[in-house]
Length: 360
Image 1 (cartoon, one colour):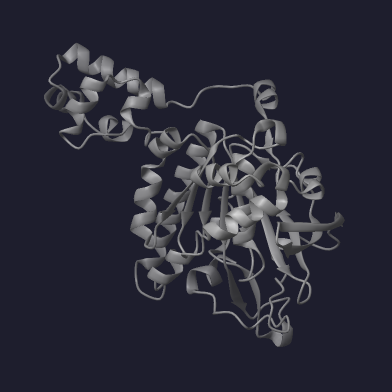
Image 2 (cartoon, one colour; image 1 turned 120 degrees about the vertical axis):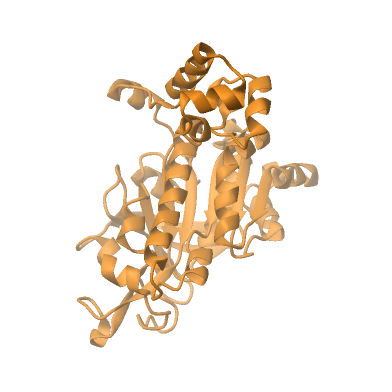
C-alpha cells in the first residue's frame, strides 16, 4: 500500500533522511512526484531517480498469490470461547477486520479487554505472545478491569503479580478523542506495530468521534465523513494484511426511523454508520440484550460462518458463553432490530443521521 513508510520499502536510511527534509516520508509522497522533482529533492541523477521510483513502485505493488498459498497461510486468533471459535472456523481471522456492534452495556469493551489479555498469552496457551495496540476513543479503557480479567480467567498464569504487570505493560493504549487524532494515529500505526511487537489492533470505538464531530445535515459533511471512514478502513485493512494480524473494531447503534421491522412503525435499532461502512468490515458480530443478565452474540456477517446466535453473560473473568450456540432462524440478522436495554424498546437511542437513513 502506498502509505507504507519509505524505510519499509527498502529505501536507505540516508535517503529517507534526505527526503524527510522535504516532508516526503511515505511511498505515496514519493510516487506523487515527477522524476524531475525526485531528482531535485533527492539530489540524484536522472538514472538514479528513475531507479528509486521503480524500486518503490515494486515494493508497494500488490503481490500475486494463489489460493493454495492463502489457504496455507490462513490462521485464526482464538477468542477462548469454544462455541464462537467453532462457528468462525477457529476464531478471529488474521489479516481481516472484525467489528463488534451493539448497545451500551452489552460488553463490547469487555470483549476488547478480554482479547487484549489473550493476545499477550504464550502461544502454548492459545495466545499470540505479542503486544496489543488499543486505540480508545471513548475513555472507556480500564487497566484495573484488564488485570482483573487476566487474573480471573487465567489464575494459574496471571496469579503471579509480576506476570500480570508484564501483561499490562504489553497493552499499549492510545487515547484519541478527535477524528483528526485517530487519523494521525492510524497513519503512524505501522511504526507503532513494529516498535511494540503488536499482534492485535483494537479500535474502541470507530463511531464515537465520527458521530460527535459530523453534523450530516450540513452541506459537504456526508462526503467528508464517508471519505474519512474509507481512509480508516483502507489503512486498517492494509495493516491487518501486511502484518497478518487481526483488527477488532467496536461500533455503536442508531435508530432507523420507520420502515419494516419497527414497532408501531416508529423505528428500530440497527448498527451505526450505514451500509457503506458495513461493507468495509470482513466480519460483523452483533451483541444485544436478552434480559437484565443475559446477552447474545449474533454472527451477522462472515466469509466463513453461517448466521448464528450464542448466549453469554459478563462475569468477573470477562465474556462467558452459555451452551454451544445455534444457527440463526430467519433472514439476515444484520437487517433485524437490535434489542436494547430499556424494556427492549427499539426507540430509546438517538435518531439515525441523514447519511445512515439514505444508506439503509
